[in-house]
Image (cartoon, rainbow, N blue to C red; front, side):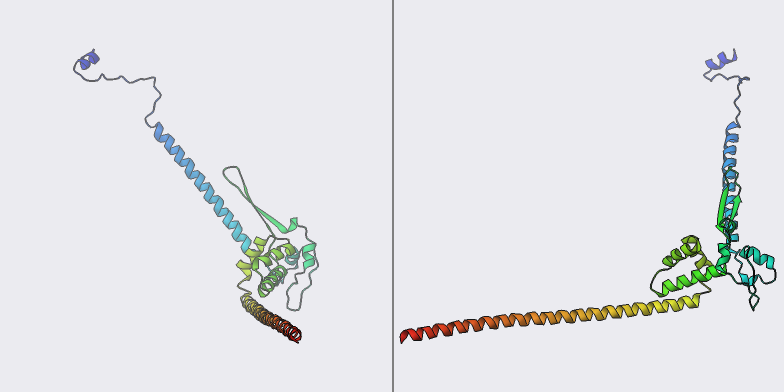
Length: 254
């Protein structure tokens, strides 16, 4: 009845609320909040994963121990060098021999970090055991040799990778991160030797070029002389022919 009267007056009829309807005016806001929370959790998980990876890498960089740092505990030295006999030198340092590495299996020289993830996957970071002093010395000597000989550090890293059983990128990272500052003086001397080698090569090349130009000039001179001789020879032949012709004419008149 009220709806009919409102229709006559030009007003839209009022709708009675549907008690059986399940529509909730806050449902859309709840869905948006759930999506935002999921995105935030994903970002948080990624940040935690990234921080864990960085912590593991930082531990890699700071875990190097040299034999000279292990002078009191033979057990620690045995753990460092493997199942080998330990002989102390006069200054108390423990020698690092290449045979110690050959007695260790590849698995004993590896360490793996497992970083859990909320997404069900785990990030695994595997690296070889800490760099030993003899490995550092070999890597440094190869870099200095290549630099002094006019080669590149990348060539040195590749050669070291084959000798040490590591990757070239790992050798490059080790050199730039830990060794370059220690061998700065030797590296400067190697670069000076490289400049001297290049200077000598340029001098030799310049000398060869000068000799080549000198030879070309000599050949050119010989060529010109040959042409002149040919012209002189042709002229002499022509003169001889004219003289013979004149003699024949004189004999004919007599």
